[in-house]
Image (cartoon, rainbow, N blue to C red; front, side, top):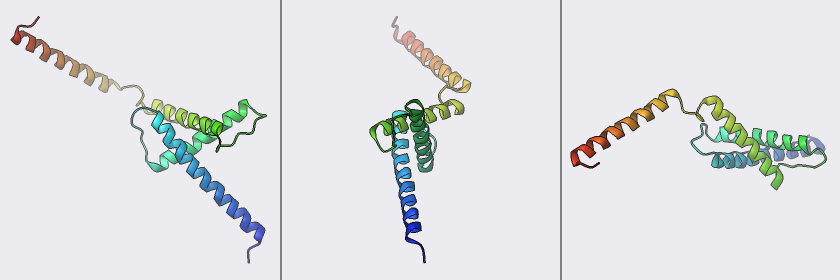
Length: 130
């Protein structure tokens, strides 16, 4: 038979894990909503980004404000966690190269603009517009 104290520790630990999962998902979704553009990954990546962002954001806040008690489930904690997740997404995009266009993307954009310009100039010649 399990000891009542052990059961309470397991119950409390399970509760904390579920709170971190829920909070991490909300933080990850908020950071992805703030960051413009498409983001890779699905639900698990969003969850992990949110949890890691919470650890980074709240940990940074605790580092700079050591005398203040910061909980992730507070307004300050939520803002810090969202900021941490946003930074993680920004670093991921920089490392993945999706923040800056690749050379092929730049060349394709230039080619499309040249084609557009040629069509416009040809149309102007046909119509006689100057």
